[in-house]
Length: 225
Image 1: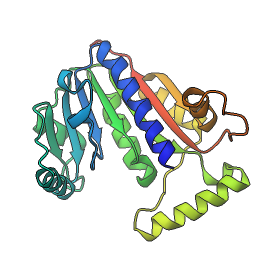
Image 2: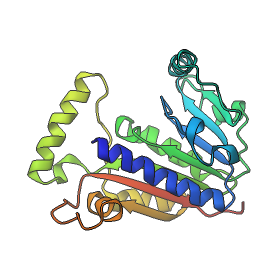
Image 3: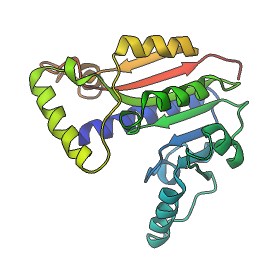
Image 4: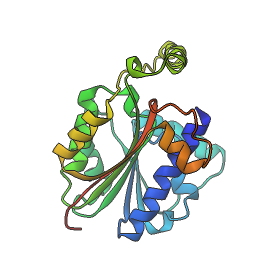
C-alpha cells in the first residue's frame, strides 16, 4: 500500500510537470488533506494552487502548519467547501479559480470512498471547463474480479477501513470507466494497472504481478487554451 501511494504521487507529479510545460498554470488538489505539494513542489512557483477540502479539515491543517512553523506559500489558496452547502464550481470560483484557463486536478485517495454520483459530478465539472483540463486519480477494479490472494487482501483491508468509518464503496471496470470519460469529453486517457505500474517504475520486476487491482489514471480534455 505504501509503495502504491508513493507511485501514484510520482505519476501525478510527472504528469503535472508535463502539463506545466504545455502551459497549465492552475493546480487544484481535491481532497487535499495534508498534501504537501504547495510547500515543496519544484514547480509550485509557476502555479496557482488551490487546495479543496472540508472547512474543518483545512482549519486543522492550518493548525498543524502553524505548530510546525511552516509558512503558507504565496502560490497557495485554500478553497474550503462543505459539499452539503456549496458545489465545487461555486467553491473554486469564490477562491479565485479561473474557469477559462487550463487547469490540472490531482484527486488521489478519494474516489474509492465516494458514491458513483459524486464521482460523476466532479468529472463532469472538470470536463465542462472552458479550457483544457487534466485530471489524475486512482481507483480499483471491482473486488469480485480480483484473483483469490488479492481478493483476500482486499477484503481484510476493506474491513479495517470500514471500521474506521471510511468504507470503500466505489469501484470501476476499466473499459466502462474509459467509455464514461470519453463520453464526457476526455480525449486522452492513460490508465496504469498493477502490472503497468511495476513495469514503469520497477523495470524487470513485473513477472507475476496481477493484471487487476489498483489503477492510476490520467485523462485530458482537448479544448482551446
